[in-house]
Length: 319
Image (cartoon, rainbow, N blue to C red; front, side, top):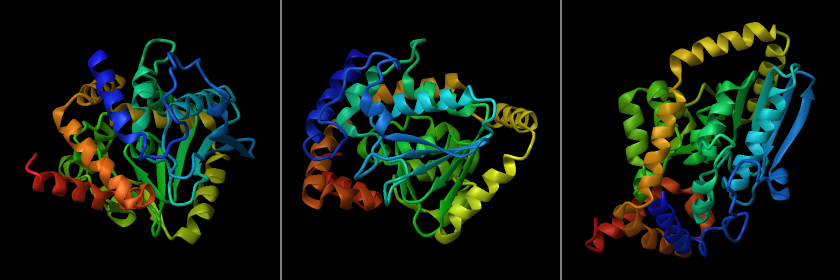
């Protein structure tokens, strides 16, 4: 783990001046209990009805996942799990152009230090908390979801996407990292081996229609119809018996989802990959790409710039 943290610190130093984030430097949390006031402001829980809640995420301008995201989101799901009335929770974004985006790469040291009260990496526990929640989780996806944001999205029970505005990308392999946030474990079960390989190895952008065809999302809808459809579905499910809903969810999850042990193994491989030479070679190149093109341009054309950075690296004589 020490080697992983050292590598993450190097990565942070390379990218911190070019990638905007919610904080200037990574915080030093040691456990999920180390919540800060900032952790409460990026997650807003709204009451749609006694049985339906909405969790809205906002970390403008690019909706990066930061260490506070894990704390706040885990706490919100655990709190709602204590309310026997809640049957459905909607997950939305309040930032135009982005659902949940990837991890803020300038804060990797904070992420690798985050653990739960049981010593489990907090990211691994967060995914387990979502999957085991005693209610149905529904993502309403408008905008880009990339990297860790996509891996988080794949943990929700149902995923509905704007046909015009949703875009999906797993950029890790393209920058020399192992995609260890659970996304590869989930997507291979949803999309099959070949399509999961293509999605992760290409590190390219996928539009909503292709994602629907792959099984990456449950369904796509015209953007003007997305909110109405998701709300109508949530309110319909809210009238059903909670025991029938949750016991059916548990049964299907037991068959279809990766185990926590499998996801923990993937996460451990991710932390090892922070020390891979290929990542270190690419950090300078991608740092310059971000400086030259601007963070917003890179984030909204992730697939293109992943390819461009690697092309530049190849032309420089490095692999």
